[in-house]
Length: 251
Ligand SMILES: C[S@@+](CC[C@H](N)C(=O)[O-])C[C@H]1O[C@@H](n2cnc3c(N)ncnc32)[C@H](O)[C@@H]1O
Image (cartoon, rainbow, N blue to C red; front, side):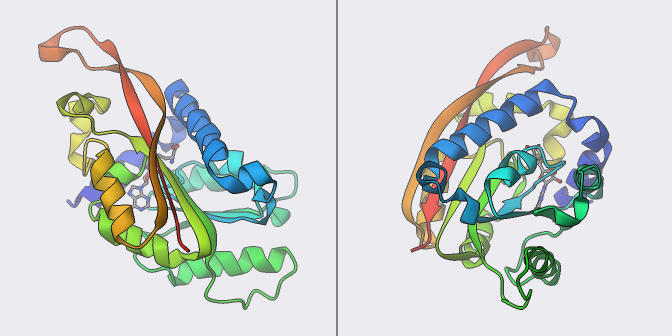
């Protein structure tokens, strides 16, 4: 079984209860606030012009916070269970046919992916455009708690770079790999689907810089206090995990 298969099975199983976990809600709220503080469009009043791509949107916790502030948001995820939860939120909107959000099952390998382009085109038609402005490109790529599931970080950053319009930005949050203790973020039973135990600050900065982004900055905007497994069968304990916000602009 590949790591991707293990992840998909894990998140399919966790989807129904994902939004009930206060830690998930807390982390997403902090990520949302950090994105609003650090992405200039949220400061200068132009956020309503943004077409956003979200990698690993899950049930849409971050997506539905961002959506009212931007022009459109397309989430991609590889777990059908998480996407079913996302889509049930769209279905429960007062008028789903006018929603500015959509989610598709895509393992991002190609900015011109058929499903991704189809979703972007459908949202464009919905807001009165021709839907033929292809290939669609985005103003902002966001992601929360997904980078640690990605095997080829350089490959992903190259795709994100190609998915952006000129002037577009990335704002990606995940927990930091600050050393051996960062492994405690996940219980050992979940390590099989984890590609890396957090994101290393210098490593991600070099990768984002290396694919051609400008204004690369890695911030440490918040931390999350989380219950973790005890050591050697001891009692569960609480630990603080710092989070990184990885920023860059395609000029
Ligand atoms: C820890 S969850 C975070 C979900 C959501 N961002 C949140 O904060 O609630 C990670 C998500 O990334 C998705 N994922 C894992 N690998 C992925 C990949 N290669 N491409 C897209 N999504 C992926 C999983 O299915 C899962 O929904």
